[in-house]
Structure formats: C-alpha cells, structure tokens
Amino acid sequence: MRAFVVDRYKEPLREADVAEPVMGDHDVLVQIHAAGLNSLDEKIRAGEFKRILPYKLPLVLGNDLAGTVIGVGPKVREFRAGDEVFARPDKDRIGTFAERIAVAETDLARKPSSVGFEEAAALPLVALTAWQALVERGDLGPGQRVLIHAGAGGVGSIAIQLAKHLGATVATTVSTGNVEFARELGADVVIDYREQDFEQVLDGYDVVLDSLGGQNLEKSLRVLRPGGTAIGIAGPPDPAFARRLGANLVLRLAVAALSRGIRRRAARLGVNYEFLFMRADGAQLRHIAALVDDGVLRPVVTRVFDFDRTEQALRSLQDRGTRGKSVITIP
Image 1: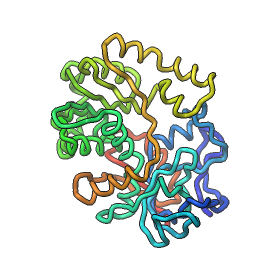
Image 2: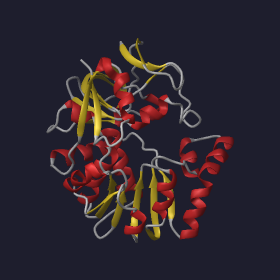
Image 3: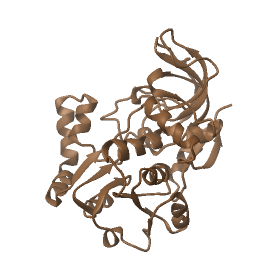
Image 4: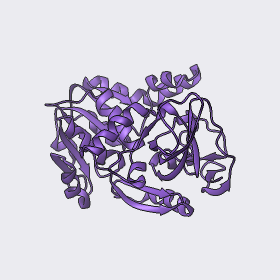
C-alpha cells in the first residue's frame, strides 16, 4: 500500500510501500479518497510533540480523511461497505496520507451528503477542535462574546461560523487581505492585525480561542472579562492535559512547568487558561455533518494537491495568509 512516511523527525516525507492496515473487531476499513492537511502534521514531523506523543518511527502522517468503507470488523454495527465517511482517527492511530486506513467505529461518521470528498476531508480535525473549544469548553451561547484568532485559517474559519450559529458575538484577527473574507464568514468585529492591536480594541470577552500561542496568548488574557477563559490549541499544555493523557509523574511535572507562567498570569488577572488537544469523536462529527448539510457550516478548501505531491503540500503549510484548508487527493 502506498503511503507517505516520516523516517526521522525533521526529515522530509518520503513515499513508501507499507503494510496493509490491521483491523480489529470494532474497526472500519476505509479507502481514502482525500486527506486534509493540518499544522499538527507539520508539528509531528518536526518532532514538536515527541515528548507527549511518542510515536514510533517510521510513521505514516495524516490526521483527516474522507473515503469509502470497504470492510468492517465483525462487531461493527453502524457502517457497511459502500458508505461514504469522514473522520479524524484517534491520536494513536493516525496515518491518513495513505491509500487505506482502519478506523475505530466510534471515531467515524458518514460524510455530509452536500459536499464532495475533498471538502469533507478538510473538516474533521478543525471542526472537532472548534466544537470542543466553543461547545464543550467554552459553553458558548447567545449574548456571549468570543475572540477567535487567525479567523481565515482552518480552525478559525470553521470556529467563526460555529460561534455565530451558537448565537455569540464574534471578533477575529486576520491579515489585511482576509478582512472581507472574515466578514463573509460572519465575524462581527474584524481586526487587521497589521494595522490594529486587538488588545487596544477589545475588552470584556467571555472566551478566546487562540491558535498562535506566545505573546498573542498573553495579550489575549487581558481582553477577557473576570472569570473568562482563554483556550489555547498551540500550547503550552497544562496539567489537566497531562492527566487526560495518562502521563507518568515526570511528564506531568514537566508539562506543569511548561504552562506555569501563563497559568499564573491568568490567575492574577482573574481569568482562566486551558490547553486543548482535540480528540477523535464520531458522534460530534455527526452533528458537524448535519450542520454542513443544513448550510450552517461551509468548509473552506483553497488548495488541492495530488497524492504524489504530499511532501510539497505539507511544506506549503508554512505559507502565511493561506485561507481555510489544503487537501490531498488519493486516486
């Protein structure tokens, strides 16, 4: 089976013949037609998560898929051969830059019927991130205000649409060329970060979804109302994440040290900081698919690459100002 693998951290991907997926009783075998590209793929390749996600190399990369079911385990009840599906596989079973993959039934959902495989493949990781940040963690609803950074990106473009559906007032930061695009997505307040400092414009927000980290995250704490929450998806990881990961004591202490500074600054301001590393969830994907078919969410795909250009596609994620998602198609 053809796939793109990383042999050593920081090295380019290479195309390789790998073993066919091994299916368990509750697994679904999927012929992949399209795979979304995410900054997480590049961070894994670069070794940025090797302490908390110790993958065994060589590793097939890829965290998003859309395709057709070609086999099911004996205990699978919800899917059958021929179903068109999409998924973000569990973090321990990634590998969508390949022709086929075995996915746990609970991580899978039927793809939205109103979009093709390329658009469906652009959704799982970013839409689940937005859902888990705004619905689960943020408990966002009518009358609340949310700041979504990088609103033209993969997570941001979906998060803006979801937040508006939830009834919130949405502010976002984008580059000059994406100001009108963010307004078209539904943002109420659009800040051109090249011309304005969001900290000087915004105040009293309930939730911030930060995908940039560093100084941007620190400034985000200061636009929150007392008791508000900044949800970071670029880090640093917090002790709650280490507990959910089942990390040993040494790793838990190391993770706590990484986020101690930002957590202390948040506490002094009377606000909260939480790290989010999204998880696979087929039930949530079913909700997301319904929102797409109802016209509430629109996947944004701006670049499509052939499978044999997967390495170039991954490197293209470093291009600044890219809207939405890039996708590879797998013949």
